[in-house]
Length: 197
Image (cartoon, rainbow, N blue to C red; front, side, top):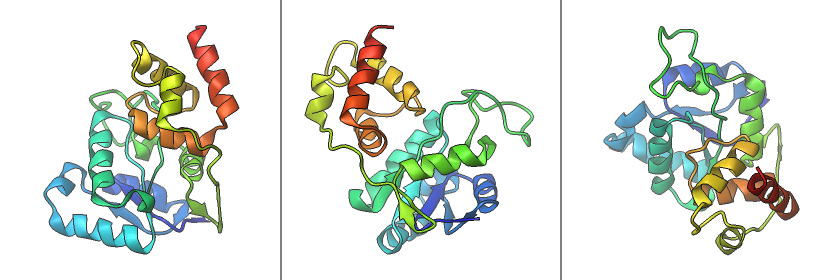
């Protein structure tokens, strides 16, 4: 079992069951979109963010990103981290059919991939955490063609894929992930490689 300091925010009970198999820490279930109207759940998220900090770990589909964005707006930026699972096509064992977008959700992802996502987000696991690797700014993203340009979205998607992140990630979320996961030199190499493909 890996001890995690932050409270992990997930969409559903099956995600919680999945994580409880290898994580020792608080896991809070939003109940999917019901969190949008559940004032009690919203207050709990705010309290947990203040006391332990939170890490949002949702599916990589559109629904997961809507929930992630909603939770992000509830709490101060310094109290929330974001862990992303890659876009992997498939279906969970308990389901008869794959989800609408055909992607595995948190409950279908292997332990190591989830653990790596939590580590890369900057969570404190077993008493240690990964510090930021970069201080890249939004202006740097513009200069690299990842923001504000004609092909910025396509280039961001290539960089996200190279980093094992979902394609739906916004420019701001990509910036936060870049600063946690790679150096400025690695980013410049990734952009050059993506532009040459």
